[in-house]
Amino acid sequence: MRKTILTFLTLISVLMATAQHKGFQPVADMNGFRNAFSTASAAIHSITSNFTQEKNLSLLSEKITSKGKFWFKKENLVRMEYQQPFNYLMIINGNNVYIKDGQQENRISVKSNKLFQKINKITIDCVKGTVLSNTDFKTKAFENSQYYLIEMVPVAKDLKEFFSMILVTVDRKDYSVSKINMIEQGGDNTLISFQQKEINTTIADAVFAVK
Amino acid sequence: MRYLLLSNVMLMLAGCSYPYRSLRSLPADQSCASQFRPEFSNELYNTHVNISGRHLSGLLLVKQMPDTTYRVVFSTETGVKFFDFAFGGQEDFKVHYIMRKLDKKVVINALRNDFNFLLMNNIPATAAQVMKGNGMLYHAYPMREKTVYYLTDTLCKKFVRAEMGSSKKPLAEATWTPAGKSSPDSITIRHHNFDFSITLKKLER
Image (cartoon, rainbow over all chains, first blue to last red; front, side):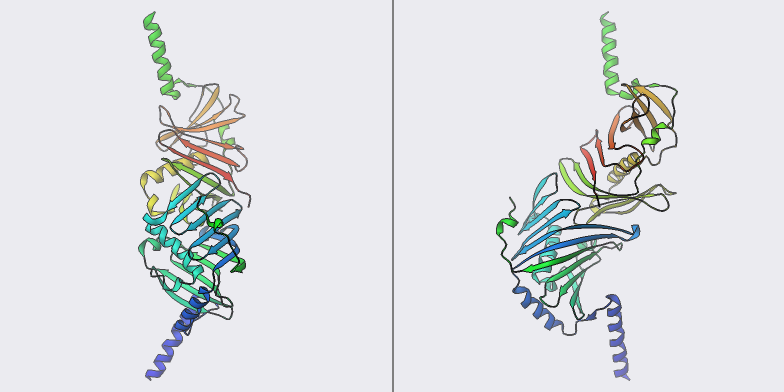
């Protein structure tokens, strides 16, 4: 009898998790995945790719699409250059952030801004493969034949204001990030998809210069 | 003679300080300013805001909903939402979302007034009065506790600018081009009583 109940509960929890993320099953061997993700990510020193960002405003049935180029270099250098339909440049270089918005340039030190530090950490952790150990979130992992899906639910109050959940889709073949989906409390979301990824090409440090 | 000069100077100074006092009411078509009402359907604007020496940029979406209300949503280029307001309809104005840091009555009221003024929302179909001054017509409409003036040439053929004022002086002004019968390509809103300006440029999607 106890065995039947246990099987039933396991089945229910599997079904619930499956219903949560269509087409994905919970990762059976979480430790195995954690180690493999961390080992594979350790071998990634740089990423160059194109990206598409879709901001979905659910109640307005509206989608705002923008496109650009993305660069990452270990340990903590990120450049996101929006090129369509507007120009906007953001460079994260350690604790410094440089923003050029078409009208003005801004340099911000995130040392004194904990929220900004946490948001920067999400981007860096996602591409560095250390996302599973980010203590600002409760994480779970799911999988299908092509991808892993990491579910991140914020624990920190300041992050909860912005996100109800972040879903990171990781490509099984090289453990690189394919999509980051930031879901807000009201149901709107921002989905960033990375295309034409090039792993470990040489990127000059000047690309991340915070002049 | 000295007193006459003095009183003239005083009158001129009063006219400068309180520009609306020197306007003269005249019989005119009280509905003609409505032809310059911007017509938004679903537009996205690259937006720059300067407030008290600080600068921020983002994307502003203005969308007319099937029930004819307008939704105005402002977010950063990276997708973080600042606010989501609804204008028009039975409730007239509704805050669907505002970031906690901006959630202050004074901020919400300033933004509410600015967009009402631009959308020509919450004003009667005809002007309360049309006045003449400075070579222009001032089409005055009461809007909440303020008055908005849509300024045109004397034939009411050309839109000059919009002003939001107290009974005495302008508090903010807005310009948009083209004016009327389409969505504006560019919009500027500038406040006179504090350092706050918004510039919008339409994006092709």
